[in-house]
Image 1 (tube, rainbow, N blue to C red):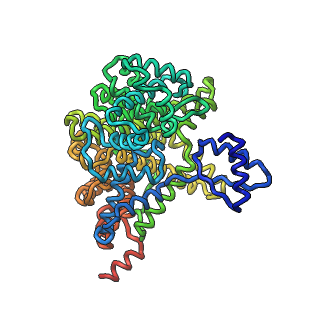
Image 2 (cartoon, one colour):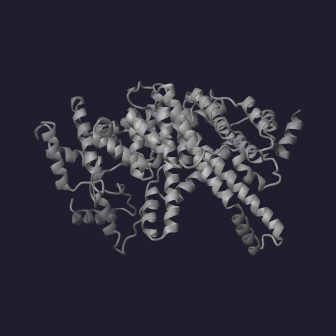
Image 3 (tube, one colour):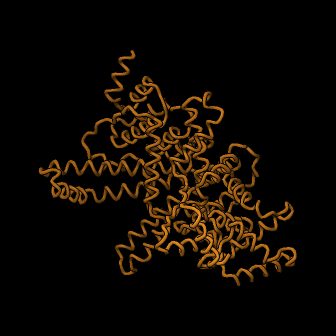
Length: 566
C-alpha cells in the first residue's frame, strides 16, 4: 500500500471503531503514515513504546523460570543463588544493549544456559549464546544447512566492509560492489548467491536495515559479533594484527571495546591475549598498585574515630527489589559512552589545556575499567584451557590494574587533602550547616574519608565483578600470595563473599584481627559483610556471629528479638 491508501485505510477504521490499536515496529513504514494521520486535529492519536525489561522485571522473569516445578523444593537461599547465577551468566550478553532486553530474547538465552548443550570448545560460552541468538534470527531466512556457512561468511565479510566505512554502513551501490567482489573472491556466481535475494531476505528479517546513513546491521550485537568473527578468522594476517593492536591501545572507544570483547569470546589466540595484556600494563604504568597499608595513612588520619557499622533488620527480598529499582533509575538517567565521547569532542577545544588533561585522565580510567572486563572474560571463558602461567599473568595484571586505578583516586585525595578540607569547610559554613570552623573542618574530613571509602569499595567491587568465579580459586590464591598486601587479601575475600557458596568465617576473622588498627580497611570489610547479609537470608544467631567477627553491631530491634528467643 502507498501512503495515500494507508491513510484512507486508517480513516476507514475510524468510521467503524471508537478506538483502534495498531502494533508496529518503530522503523516500519506504517509508522510514518500514522504520524501523518495524527496531524489531523479531528483525531487523537497516542504513541506508546513497549519498554524493555529493566533489573526488576528481569529478576522477576528469572525467578519465575527458576521456580518452575521447584517452588516447594528449593530453599530460599538456593533460589536466590540460582537467580544470581543466571543473572551473572546473561549480564555480559545483554550489557551495553547488545541484545534487546525483551522477554523473548531473555528466554532464548536462559533456555540455552539451562539446556547444558555441549559447547564448541574453540569458543567461549558467551560466544555460543550469541551464536544461538544469531542462528535463531537467521532461521526465518529459510537457509538449508548446507548453505549456512556460505551465509555466515557473507555476513562476516559484510560486517568488516561496514567496519571500514566512516558510519559503519554502506550505500546501496557500495553494497552491490561488495557483493560482486565477494562472488569473485569466493569464485561463485549470482545464481549461487543472488544480490536481490540476499538483500531482500536480510532486510525483511530485520538483520540489515536501511537508515539515513545507509544499510547497517539492525542489532549492534550482530555487527560486533561478525566483525570480531572476521578478525578471529584472519588473526594471522598482518593487517588484522595491526587493527587489533590499535584497538587495544584505544580501548576507551566504545566500538573498539565491544569488538575486542567479542573477539576474546571467539578466539583464544596467543596474539590477542598478549596484546590485551600489553595494553593493560601501560595503563597507569607510572603508578604503584594500592596496598591499603601505609599508602592510605593520610586517609586514615582524616578521622580520629569511626563508629562501627550497624546491621539493620532488613528483608532480603525487599532489599534486592529496591536495589534493582535503583539500578533501573540509574540506567535510565545514565549518559551513554557515545554521548560522553561526543560531548568530550565538542565541549572542549584543543587549546583548553586544563580540560584536555581532565578528559585524558577520564579516558585512561575508562580504558582501565574496560580492560578489566576484557581480561576477566578471557580468564572466565578459558579457565580450563589456559596454562597456569597464562592465568596467573592475566589475573595478576587484572588485580594490579584495578588497584592502580584505585591508587590514582586515593593519591589525588591525599595530595589535595588540605585544599579539599578547606574548600568543603567553607561550603559547610556558607550553607549554615555548621557555624564553628573546627567542627566544620571535622565534618569535611569525614566527608573526604567517606569519599575514599566509597571509591575503594567500588573499585574493588569492579575487580570482583569482572573476574569473580570459584573456577579460578587456585589462581586467585597464588596472586593474593604474590601481591601479599591488604588490598589483594580483601579483594580475594570480596570474591568469596560474592561468588562462593559458604561464608568464609575463618578468613574474615583473621583479616579483621590483622587490621584492627586500620580504620579505613576494617570499615570496607564491614561494608562487604553487611552487603552479604543484606543479600542472603541468615538466621539471627548466624547474623550475630558474623557481626562479632568484624566488630559490627546489630540493631537494637534484632538484639531484642535474639535475646527474647534465647
